[in-house]
Length: 111
Length: 113
Image 1 (cartoon, rainbow over the protein chains, first blue to last red):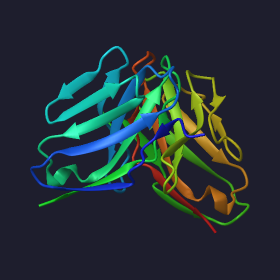
Image 2 (image 1 turned 90 degrees about the vertical axis):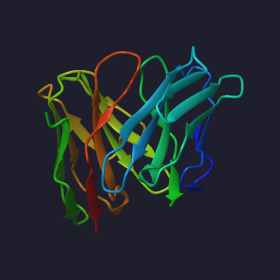
Image 3 (image 1 turned 135 degrees about the horizontal axis):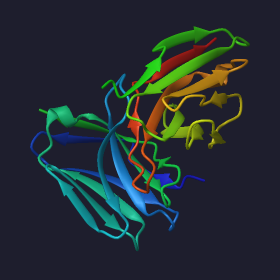
């Protein structure tokens, strides 16, 4: 039973445009959500997070939106740059317990 | 400040052999984790530790053992390797608290033939 789902295995976007990565979850007890970015042959690195008491968090070109009623979150990257090409993992946790990860979405930004 | 380091980076084992993966962190983090990453499956938690001398099972613990004798080190052992354990293994650590932002090592690519 996948509690965190990233239904798009890959996404291709033109440089300068917006990238939107989506994530759905099933556990209504999740209270903290994170996005990680992973380059080949490296470990995942933390990108941005959001608490369940908020519906939006912004950090530079990256914004995460949370829709609790739909159990859906999304990561927006504006503008997209070639260096953003990587695998993006959505993750969720319940009261500081273990992180549950989605399967990841491969983002390719074309120049 | 090296962050989280993992040893070795690559390893090839034959079925039935044993090995230990070492994770070290220099950030004085209380919590440490071992994950495996397989194609199309994201990261799955094998074992974790909430402090020196403590360990607990994660989602996929079978075939693995762990030890946390020192706060900065977390060891993952495979007693009798199987081809199904071919994977990329990541270690992570974090401070205690609810935000759960974990810092990952560079990974160990293990192949079991």
